[in-house]
Length: 303
Image 1 (cartoon, rainbow, N blue to C red):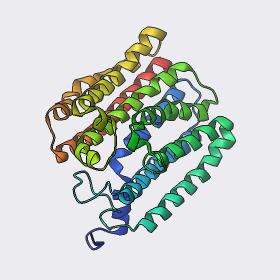
Image 2: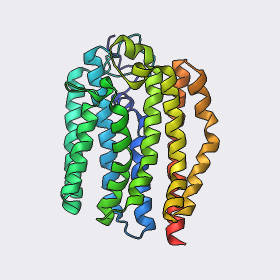
Image 3: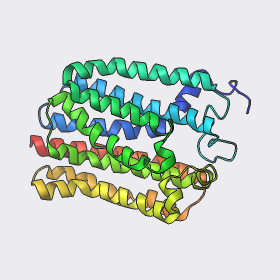
């Protein structure tokens, strides 16, 4: 496909490449980590702001690498039914995308220096592993997305690593309930990934991309989505019953009442456009969950 920049400005093209609908997965655990630090009176907003910027940049790096690598592997072609990919569409050249990837990594590392100076070696480990996981999701000799390991990495790095890491760079300490709480946004991110894999099931199968949906089938993916969603919503109740603390954080479980919005299309639709909307709606429910959990934790800690 020939490049067509007449319909979109360069800014619009790069916004499209960054995939804004995926950014809640990066931002919500940081917001939750900051709210938990604020509730515990150990917050430090400058560190929280830098952590949020780094989290968003790491997500964008992963999206850029995915756009570039899937184009080079031939996975993104004219048969794909998901949102437009800028490299495959000819809106950005592979060279331009590579430059953008390296620039995003450089900016992330530059910002990360502040967090390293504040938090030390633990921040170095979290930062390097987070960037690396974003890159090897679709690039390298054993890309996670092509061998069915992406789900576990998404769970970890968009869950407890992001939430507890954000808490740590403010408090310079951590406790197990913060880590446990972080698994909820991680599970929501797994659900987002699962919708993506459901939508691309046939295309991935044709290109030997062995996601869990390809390996175990459509039914497995549908139940993986439901399990991830319900378990995420039940984590606050589990934390309250086990710890006896943070009871108001359980208000985030009210997100379950909105589950028909996303569960119905996951279990009944194969239309790619509808599943694209479901992916976006799952991101919106993640935001609702994160806001409710954050308010609940602060109320539980302060009153």
